[in-house]
Length: 635
Image (cartoon, rainbow, N blue to C red; front, side, top):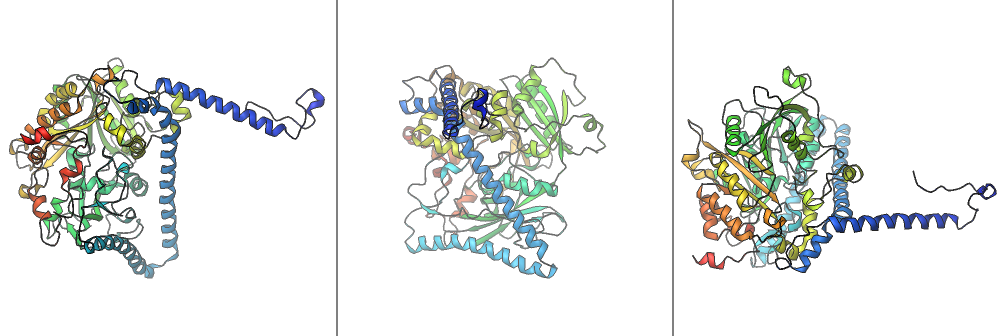
């Protein structure tokens, strides 16, 4: 309720404020002055608490130090509200499409299904035709520069915000439609915007649920569409703004990657347009295995993705999550091995490390409230993503700070039921744990209550407001790195991360890496790292660091180039891989040592695809622009 009261017109007779035509304007002016004052007080407060005060003037330019000082108020009053408005726009767009689809389905009879199928097919083909026409125009102009998408780099999930300046850019932003959902009963297209049917996939199993989408569809779009049907992507990436195309052609991992592998392992079919404007389709188990297995991690270096079909999983409304604290890197390694390399592993396995020794392993399985599992029946329901709740990772950390809790036979100190939608996007609200570095009080109850309903700042908008000058300086003040190495090396990797970065929490996702010989593509595990028996995969673990390095927090110098290169060398020597959305400080030779280019090079040189002169190599797309590697390149 407002603090001021608008008096009755006759209040002056009772000693109240006199009636006057100017009174409403006066009250409005008072209100504006009041709330402007509150805004200014909040701004001054945020300027004081919203930036690191120990940045060395000799290490960082004045632009970066000014941006660091202004970062928190800009985020709170500009970026967070804009992110909310973009989210509202996406929700409205999705709901309007849902409404149009449902009305169309209610009006048409079974005889109209074929006509609707044709309409959806033609709609997709028209959108693809727009891409082809742009490529044909580029060919007619003499193929003078490399091709890239016109999507601004700030909209992507990688740390890169430049690199397309000299490219010929192709608009693919209109490819953002869900085309069909196959619920696994043969009724493909029943819940999509329509369907684009093709031949049945070989080797995928009868009745396998799947969804066919264009590459610009996001994980948030698919959560809204699939969850009411009792489905989710078989590997549903955490961050809502990640696109399916980015996860398929770049990097996608989740807490069930120990059983499903990277996102690429759930893709059943790709459709892309090559540099000659030809539409090509590659299916799992199809005739063009080379093209199919060359596309993952290719980052658009073969062609423009226009459609893909992805495997889904039938789900239940809750995830039964159990928490197992560990007290050393060796104990963590053994616990992860126990729950990832056996025959009856939990559906979800991850770990969060809060310092070099202490971690919490989180295990999860789909469940329902009426399941027969006695443990699930005894577990409370925890809706972790309500905006007034503490960030999920802080809640997990509290289990370590509590007095010793009794353990069940599995070693878990707590078991609870988390609604699936909350679990699937459990780190979105806190941008994993980056938000507290940007808005130090973002987990405070008052901020959550008054501002938390707006959600977190969108990663793309964070990059947009950062700009190239600030981005260059932030390389030396902030780290986003992931090392994917065999699980048996995890303890050494944790100690290495502690020395190179000193950033906590750390995130650990176990992941299968498959060995398919020549068809392994970019990632090929060493024979010594394959599991025993007839298994054709190795168990790796992705260790991720996101935040401000320990030396920077204490005001000491820290070299991004030397520390990241040390991590890259350690990972390379152990047959591991680096996530390529991060800052990459490899030389070209070192990059080709880490990643197997044989299959991708062969496909890029193939006659008709002709990608070598049309698309930049993966290295040229992902290498850091912020480090001088001339000396290292000469070695």
